[in-house]
Amino acid sequence: MPGAYLLFRVIKLFSVILKLKVGLEHICCFVLLNCLVLF
Image (cartoon, rainbow, N blue to C red; front, side, top):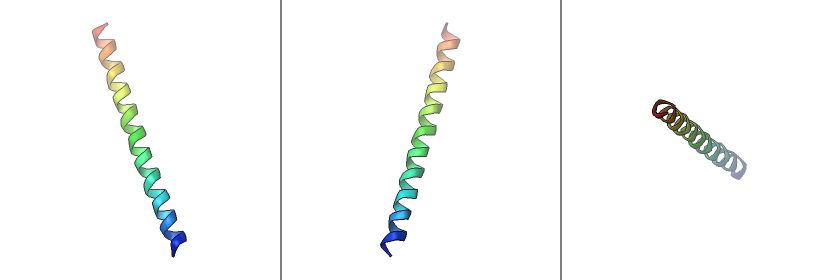
């Protein structure tokens, strides 16, 4: 069934994007904390 496969692909892509977004937020928080400690 191509519909189910397509849905699976979209969900997988969405989870990857979500992980990247969370990772970027963690990196930004880490950088901000380091800047606050330095200044």
